[in-house]
Amino acid sequence: MNMISGIKLYIEKMCTESGPGMKIILLDKETTSIISMAFSQSDMLQREVYLFERLDSGRSNERLKYLKCIVFIRPTKQNIQLLANELRNPKYSAYYIYFSNIIPRTDIKYLAECDESESVREVKELYADFLCVNPNLFSLSIPNCMANLNWLPDALTRSMQGITAVLLSLKLNPVIRYRAGSQAAQLLAKLIYEQITKESSLFDFRSNMDGAAPPLLLVLDRRDDPVTPLLHQWTYQAMVHELLHIKNNRLDLSNRPNVPKDFKELVLSGDQDEFYGNNMYANYGEIGSTIKQLMEEFQRKANDHKKVESIADMKNFIESYPQFKKMSGTVQKHLCVIGELSGLSNKRNLFEVSELEQEIACKAEHSAQLQRIKKLIADERVSVEDALKLVALYALRYERHANCDTSGLLQIIKTRGGRAAVVPSLIEYAGTHVRQGDLFNMVRITDAVKLTRNLIKGLKGVENVFTQHTPLLKETLEDVFKGRELDPLFPAINSELVPFRRPPQEVVVFIIGGATYEEALAVHQLNNAGYRVILGGTTIHNSQTFIQEVLAATSGIQFKHTKSMIKYCSTDNI
Image (cartoon, rainbow, N blue to C red; front, side):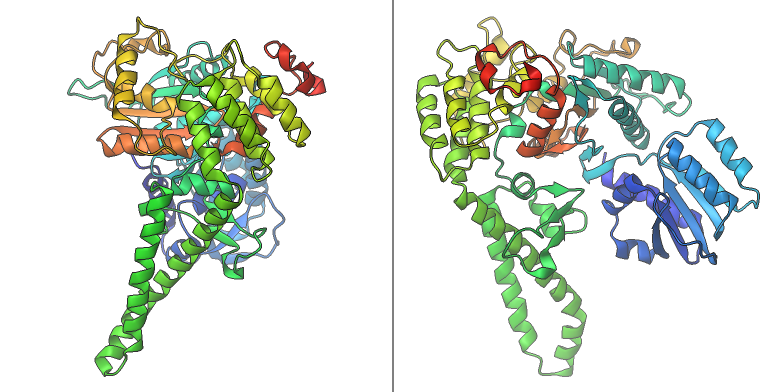
């Protein structure tokens, strides 16, 4: 279950089916991102694709009849119309059309009528309607999916189409479970079920003959775990995203002052950068020592290249020079990124802030934590954004505590010019009245399994104070694979597939409201232990984008659960 290799196979198929010869590829905004995250431009050039054009932007009317044209677009109404216009007045010798998802027959008929010159050679559906970030992680790049705490209609449709494409590309016809009590999760699960039923011939994959349980699609809601996206991260990929923001596997450093000109925009893809692929889940300390080893190896090779004395030496130098050059680029690129991370961590006092964040997330020590928070958020070295996150975590954990002093902390944030309105919005979005499951390990004595789990956690102690938090998703998936009863909390929508007592072998998880790289790390660890899990979300969040999502989702609703913080609320929520 590798998302990137799935997309690559589809692109290979497009390039080979159109035969030898020079080709142009016509894309839309979304399929441009889909292809660029799986293949580099040089990879496409090797497959004789020399030109890239957007169907939906201004193009020249020059006829290039010596070129074949591969069209790879999403089957939207706008794209169908633009393609119809193209076919009425074809610029290329032949068209090979691929849609990234299921296309209605009526649209195919309409395109056939427009193709009067009969230049279309192929029309196919290739189910590549999602952005593959890591082999085990996909995104639909929907930054805000809710308004008034309900689905935005376009985001709902796009999520259904994206997940359907993921299931078709992996050849899975799963049991669909959703988080009980979440209307958003139930609605999305229902739409996916209806689509699978409607397109039952496409989902007619051979069921497991050996009696294994069917695969599982688990639709979750970000509102159950608002803590994970707020925490500062210390693994490489997650830390880069938190501090510098990765978008579609690209890192924009153009606004950072001391970055060399060649490194203003970097591609961070585990598939195209071996060092990054091997170290994206390594923690900050490990990355430092790994880059030091890489530097030493690079210096050793650089010294070897200075000793060019015989013809054989020259030959070796010429043969190994491309590798040497590539290694030089890798070393410089990652030194540049790590330099930025190190500078920001020290400037923002992140070690101290992060340690307290982890303590709040993992331990209930109200009075001690409150004093530490007050001290830290008044410290000018701590940025207002980081101070706000500490208050948000405190408000989530101690919302129902007798001595909860969120208002007092918000007053300090307001005095420092921070966005105090974020905290009441967050409580409305994901307070105790919304969450199901066991976010802060508030375990009842009757729940023997969880009590034992917590006891073992306590006895083991903490390996690293900066990474002691584990996302709720990890515990949910452990329950799935251990075959524990899922029913009251995660009901199944297509219950006729359910009477299997064995746990599923393959699980696809989709988080409405966005996934995080910390959750991707938890999934990676489970996959390394022999399980098969794919994680997806409407987007991939860091703390800033998550706060934006919370504010967008709660704008305009009347706040009912934050009366004590009314003076810090935005005026449109009162």
